[in-house]
Image 1: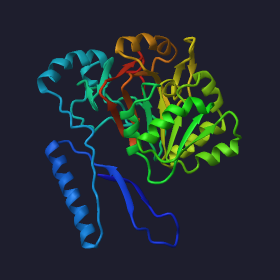
Image 2: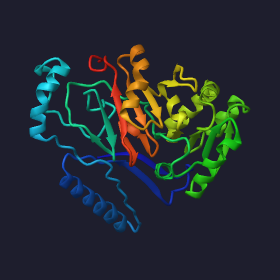
Image 3: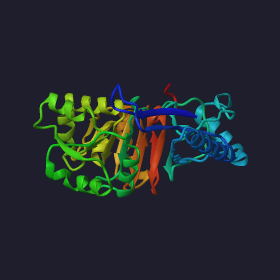
Image 4: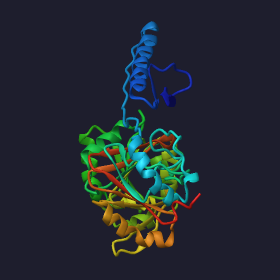
Length: 342
């Protein structure tokens, strides 16, 4: 169990009335997890009552422990040995919790991630990794540029207690719909940060205290990419490191990978927040993902490609914490050099 966020007070000489703590609890067994959950709630509320305070406790069990079926594992073992180059490279005694920055715990061609559970059961030698920047905030990549109310509602649950919403774009009209939708969902006060007309100091000041940054998904991705360079993306990164959530929907999500395609189909280098990853938003199935990633894998055989369909989102949190939102699977496929990398 880890307490990774503590927020309380806003000045040096006043004792605050409330505090907000957030963290992660992991277990290899559902019964142990449930027992720890109950004990946490009992202790938290008991200590608060003893001190004359009130406490609320909420927990989201995003992923249950996955235990490989012994029979299926035995049948897969000869196949996996061929994939990784011999029985001596297989490790069947390793236990991992969730998907973590130490690596996607699967390296057998491609698979889908859905319903917040990994739909694959292979094991392998130590893996390379899906990595994103170390920060106190969340990076949320949504598959649709038209907005998804369920995904946006999840985003609002991850906001730190203080700070507004910054809508980062080039035209106010392009952001009207998302601003209205988030307002209806109860988002904090929001404002447009026009990265085309505002100077570097204005952009930095506008993003200094925000809790949520929304990237314009309606703008031409090439134009947005070019305009983000420099002070804008540096200010976004600084806010994210301080605990802000960054929401990128549709083509804006694609820009944050190592590669992306412009509207003419030309493959370009991305902003690199997801190193060695080709992010494909609004991609409905794995076959299309493999076809889309051929050119990427020719350039960078160690890369991986992630397809995020409409109705799904990839949420990347503190300490390698990864969640899948929505009711559709996220597809992942690997380049031919992925197994040899690292």
